[in-house]
Length: 344
Ligand code: SF4
Image (cartoon, rainbow, N blue to C red; front, side):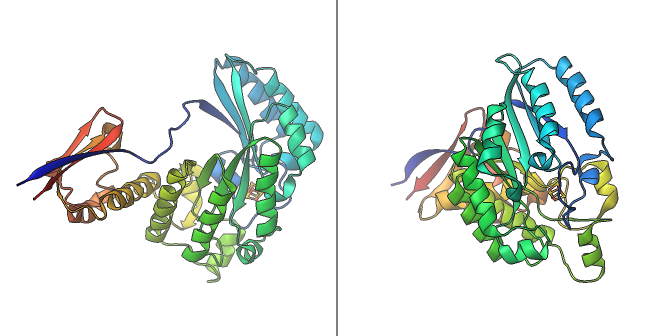
C-alpha cells in the first residue's frame, strides 16, 4: 500500500532585520597603512574624501532622513581616527537619534584598533554594533597579507566587543595569500565560536594598484577560482544560518570603480545568489538524507524561486537525485518548506 507523508520545515536563514541602514563611507580614514588587498576608493566609488566634507554631507543627509533608520561608518578604521573626529561624527549622529529617527549606529574598524576603554566610549556615544574587519584568524595568512596583528588579537577583539556590551559583526575575506579551503573552514568554526550577530563575506579579489595586484603580476599570488569561492561561501553560509548568524553581505558590491580596476579573482554580479543557491541545495540534501520515500511534491516560499535551481541551473542535477524536478516543485506564499513523500 502506498503511504503519503508530509513534512514541514523552515528555511534555515535567520530573519533579517528590516531596518534601513544608511552607509557612510570614510575611505581609508584612520587606517594605519594600506592593506595589500584593499582599495577603498574603488570599493566605495569615492575618491579622496576630506573629513570636513564627509561631516557636512552627513549633516545634510541626516537632515533629510525620516526614520526609523540605522547608520554605519564604513570604509576605514573608525577607531583609528583622532578622538576629536570620532566625537564629531558620533555627536552629529546623536542629534538625530530617537524612536522616529536614528535607532541603530554601527562602526567598522580593525581588530588591533579596539580596547575595552575605546569600546566603552563608543557605547556611551550611542554605538550599538562594531563590525571588525577580521579577514581571517590564521596568523600566517594575516602576516603574509601585512595586516599587522595575529589570530589571537582578532579573537580577543571580538570577545572585547561582546564584553563591552556591543553587538558584534565579523567581516571575513577568504582567499588572502596562503589561505586555502581548510584554513577558511577553520575561520568559519572560530567565527561561530565567537557568536557574532552578523557576518560579511568578501572573497578576495585583485584590484589594480594594490599591493596584491603587484604580487599577482609577479606570480606570487593566485586568487581563488569563482567555483571555490562559491562552494566555500555557500557551505559557510549554511553553517552560519544554522547557528542563527545573519550573513548580511556576500561578495563586493559591483561599484563601477571596482569593476574598472578589477584584475582577477572570484567576483561575479550574482555571487550572493550563487552562494545562497548552494546553501539551499545543501540544506535540502541534509533534510532528505536517510528518507526512503519518493518526493511527489515540494512547496517552497516564493522568495526562493530565484535560488532553488541555481545560476545556470547548476543545482538541477543534484536536486534531481533527491527526486526534486521541475514537475513537482511549487512555490507558495507560506514561509515554510513542505515536502510530500510517497512510501510504498
Ligand atoms: S582593509 Fe581596512 S584597515 Fe586595511 S586599508 Fe582597507 S579599510 Fe583600512
